[in-house]
Image (cartoon, rainbow, N blue to C red):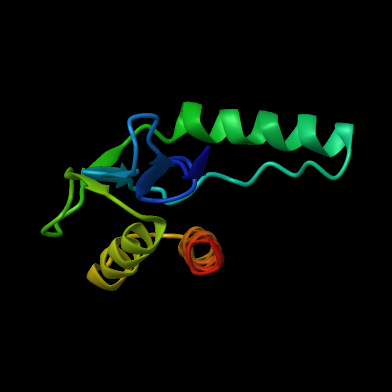
Length: 119
């Protein structure tokens, strides 16, 4: 499961099948910004907004390098809490990182801590 993907932000974050959590940081981003979001509230709006999303990508093809120290790097963390800390640091550095991804990782860390305390 990915916590966030390139189409939503500047990082791609997932729990790695080899263990731990992996973060790939974008080295460039679209100069036009973000594409329109897909609205899944109904079949009709999903189809219309999906078409708008695809059209946006078809017409906005120019990218620029991200000039931040960790641009283009990848990281591996041993726990969801460490991954959340890394994402918070990347966000503070200037990358577009969704707060809900950080929050989800912190919740997983809290659940793990609760399991370890009880078990």
